[in-house]
Amino acid sequence: MLTQKPKRYRYPAEIISHAIWMYHRFNISYRDIEEMLRYRGILVSYETVRTWSNKFGKSFADVIKKKEPKPTDKWHLDEMIIKMNGVKFIKTVDLIFQDFCKFCKI
Image (tube, rainbow, N blue to C red; front, side, top):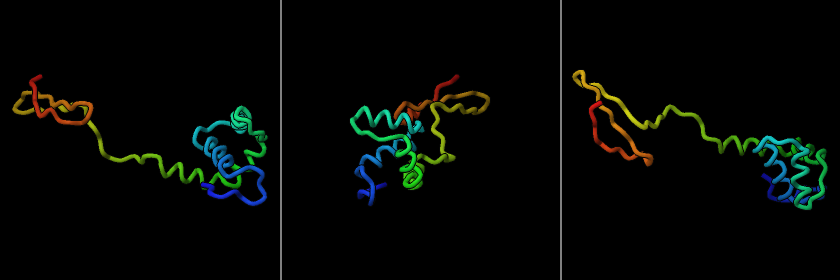
C-alpha cells in the first residue's frame, strides 16, 4: 500500500491506491476505473491506471490475497445424525452455533 506520494507522479497516493485497489479487488477493467474516477472529478486515462497497476500492483495483490480466508479442514454442521443400537437420533445446532444438546428420535 502506498503511504506517501510517489516521486514524479501527478496524483496523490490515495487516488493511486484507490484505483489499484479497485482493479485488483473487484477485477474490473482499466476503462471502468477511468470512468469511476472521472465521475468523481478525477481526470485520468486508462493507460495511466494501467501504468500504476504495473508498477504498484504486485504489493496490492499480495495484501489482498493475505486477507482472503484460507481453506481449512474445519466444518460447521447444522445437524448431525447418530445411530445408536439401531435407532437414529438427530442433534441440531442453531444459527449461532450453540448446541441444543437435545437428541430427537427420527
